[in-house]
Image (cartoon, rainbow, N blue to C red; front, side, top):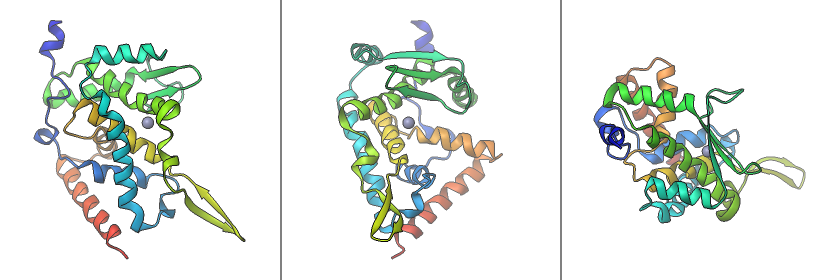
Amino acid sequence: MSTLQTKKNIQSFDWEKYWPNLSPLYLSYLELERDPYYTFLPTDELEEYLQKAMHIGAQAAKSYIQMDNLSFFNHVLKENIRIHLLEQHPQQSNIRAQYNRKKQTIVIYKNSIKEIQRFLSNEIGEIAHIDLIILHAYHEWFHHLEETSIGRTDLKFRSVVIKKRGPFLVKRPLSRLREIAAHSFTQTALGLRWSPLLLDQFRYLLSKGYTNAKIRESFQDTQRTYYAIINKK
Ligand SMILES: [Zn+2]
């Protein structure tokens, strides 16, 4: 047990103390912007979509807020879902974790855990391994809930019209809304003061060689762009 006590706990650390922070709303916007059909969403609906997706995740997390790690793992086992730890995804090494409904498993890739651990430990000391496993497990657990009880997040929204063929409209759901909800679920369930979306955003910006100053600038740009979009009538 002593190793758990000497390592930093993921809930207790304050992202802002070490790195530029961006609030969940803007991070969710960056996430939705990557959806292949994002450009078909009318701009006056953007904020409502983001808020609703975050709300769906946070609501679903309510019964998990008081749950400790052991109770969570027991809860998962009771529903016959197994958690597997594998070295890395066979084709796409950037995939952190996956839920497979047919196989009733959540797979978490260790290379991703190690990568996050390296990144965090440079600044704040070693984070307990179990905390990073739980961070991924909660995210995938939300996708399990989507498939089995609460329904797919993207299908709770109006699909966007991507084409008109005569009298017919071709519509598509925005699947990235599921990711926004899953991250919001994880943040709320674990009581984090920062959105787990920050980890992906940082990974992306660091891979482009950004310094903290440049990241801060890019976050300010994001906020400006966001307001320009939602105020465009
Ligand atoms: Zn996901």
